[in-house]
Image (cartoon, rainbow, N blue to C red):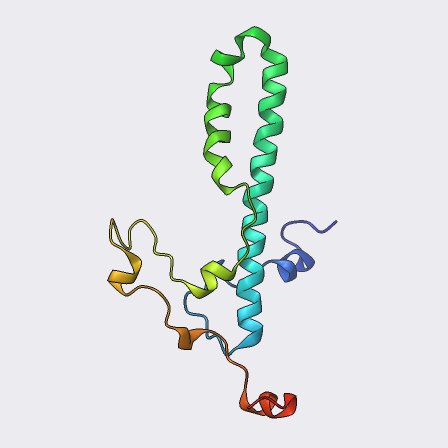
Length: 135
């Protein structure tokens, strides 16, 4: 198993952040790297939630009747991680701009003009359309 500092570990580490910001949609390898990074980030959050749930179960078993007092912090942490437990995929984030909390507060995305224009979605080159026979 590779150590966290080894060459094999660094080769598998994603080279792009898990967002579609600054991604050219016509650069297919970079687009796929961004998609993979988003999926991996969702899996990491889901697995972290699973680990917290396992620790919470151990705490409930260990503390017995006092679990309400002793396991409160783990319970709150697990409840916060519940919203990231599902793997949603990358299509919504790829096709829509999702602002952070500091970007926009209380404004509608469409009214603010923050949805990605349809021209930014990856397009099929015309030579491929000719090969397929599409017009």
